[in-house]
Image (tube, rainbow, N blue to C red):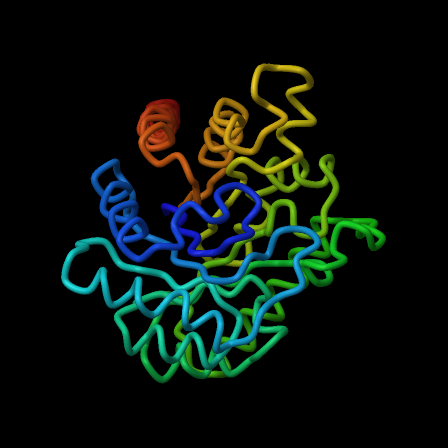
Length: 273
């Protein structure tokens, strides 16, 4: 999944793709580089962000969705937690809903997914973007994430979304400490017991810079490419089905190699049974 932020204030690429032409070209470039989904977002959810109105969010995303109509082979997901934005985006061509609040902000997003037969991605966030990194972290992060996503999936199922159309995301960096982010990556097989495909987004996140110490460029979000590569490989090895990334060309290469390792391990297991 390639990230297309049409925002002025996203933590990594805010302001780079505000223009419709630039956004459309970047989406096409990501698809050429190997993205199987393009994730369009008009509202930053970085730590400390306060949010915007549905009208402002629509002003950012609808022209881009219209500009992409008929040009992409890959499906578009709309990264929003607002029903009004999700509904308008679906009418403009978005095929997947990506809700970073896992329906806590507006459960009607699930109703829309059920009615329009759209896949929905449910991401766990502890708290709200404005304060999520300042509030107390969960004592047991794996239990907290699993419980939250189980509840969200139940809401989606009740709203008419088939189980096969639900994807879950542990929300790396969203109200979790650096240590908890690593724990969640290591415990993806436990999260998989819920029975849904897993999406993981670690791309360029600040905890990677802290892990890398003083490596060149690690302090800047755009410089965390190798740190991102490590977590992308780890997530795939632990069972992630989708990885959400900014640097599509590089991470597609990482994913292909890691997939080959996973497949080799499966073949080896089959021979030893």
